[in-house]
Image (tube, rainbow, N blue to C red):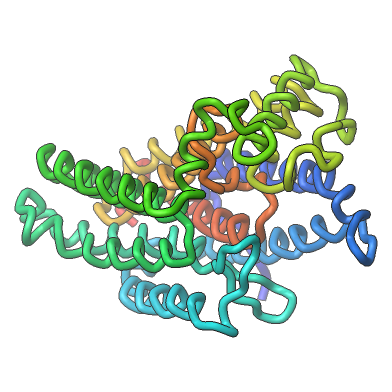
Length: 371
């Protein structure tokens, strides 16, 4: 069967996405090869090989999803949410869940480690878009219109917190509120949800000492420079070292075991050190273009499900960018949220590519074709 590209795909979005993803691959290799050399069996390409596997898998599914009408996911919504709940529960089963650095968030299948909570990010968006698009006639009623789907969100929040993963759970909760907002709920319903969500965040944040240290260390990392403040201090040094144009690709000093795991959540610090503020401008500029395109699609889409789906996808990515950049710069607590399309992490890269592939088929819809 001959593969063909649709002319109505959003090529502006597609090109931006893959430029950013390829840039991310380059930076993952630059930031990780020293760690590969230091392994028991030295392999400077260890991390980049795994990331490339996920990139090619994600690219394949990107091309497939580009040819699937977005309304197809509406039919799959109930099945996807059930499978997601099962996967989140399996993570907690001894012998099934895979633990890294004290957190059990992965399921290992062969050489792949799958993080179900990353998959849930897109599944919950599809589910909420499907449900709220059918509740438009009574979305102003809290008990009948707004509340029922949020029970599922709360259950998913609890399962993710058991892993534990406060950052991912919070991002899912925030995107749920955003979808409720765009669905047309009353402002006092949103205010009530904000109060409940903020209270839950406060309770879970204070439930463990390490979470309290994470959430307070960004205020004054120098109060504990060898423990809770270490990562942020080393990030500051990397950013300051880079200046405007950076030290040059591959020339970072902080990745030489000063900054812990520089190719994951704090890869932006290495980008700043090696490519300077210009590198940061490229990353944030590309993400801003994706956000702009997504908001345009969501605003112009005539189909309620498609509109909510577009807003959910693009704001989920925006939330992750804000959390990650805030953590790296010390403006927000460290939450362990990766930088979309850039940080090392196969599940995150794969899900982000598939999510953006759904957006890429919306171009015809945005200009009046009710797909």
